[in-house]
Each structure stands twice: as C-alpha cells, then as structure tokens.
Image (cartoon, rainbow, N blue to C red; front, side, top):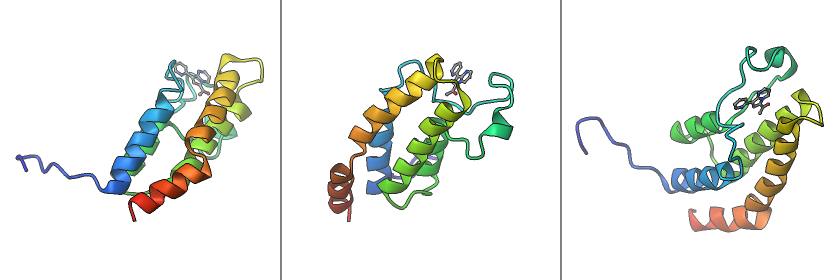
Length: 121
Ligand SMILES: CC(=O)c1cc(-c2ccccn2)c2ncccn12
C-alpha cells in the first residue's frame, strides 16, 4: 500500500461500481451525475424529499453503505422517479428519466442481481 492508504474494494463494492458504470452509460447527457441545486432547479429541495444522483450512489458504495445490490436498485429508482416528479412530462429531463429507468431496470433485473449476490457470497 502506498502512503495514502489505498483501500482494496470488496467484491460487493467492485460489483456495485460496475453496475453504476453500466447505468451511467445510459445517461450520456450526464443529467444524473450530480445533485440538483435550487439554482438550476427552482424549488427542488422543497418538492423532492429524497434527492439522489450517481455521485451520491458512488459515495455510498465507497463508504460501504450498501449491503446488497437491491439497495442500489432502490436508490436508482428514486433518482429516476425524482426527475419524473419534478420535471413536467414534456421536458427532456422527464423523458430522459423515463428512458433511463427502463434501461436501468433491465440492467438491474432480479435474476441478474440474484446471480450477482450468489457470486459474491
Ligand atoms: C435530473 C434533473 O432533474 C435535471 C438535471 C439537470 C441538469 C442540467 C444541466 C446539466 C446536468 N443536469 C436539470 N436541469 C434543470 C432541471 C432538472 N434537471
């Protein structure tokens, strides 16, 4: 290990990081990379009770917050649903969120998470 203690990732952290990489490829405009601010989204913090973004998910993986891939799936769904709540249906953000949710649910489908969990037990 070099001076700055480089922590090895656990198998779960490796698997979750790979899932996030796959999910982020479905957000080419990076609409979901960073938390919303009331500056770019007026009233966001009063309307959305559980803000979530890919950066926050990566931080939770790093801090070993997630104990299973299913917990990551919950945050992913919240992130997409937040955008479909805050943004009107005709906006690019609402449409991007709906599309991202659909493609994400394929990546995170139960069978895949099952076999992933078995592979790291
Ligand atoms: C995801 C979302 O709700 C969102 C992302 C963005 C956004 C805006 C610029 C760059 C990246 N993401 C945004 N802007 C205004 C209102 C809502 N949004």
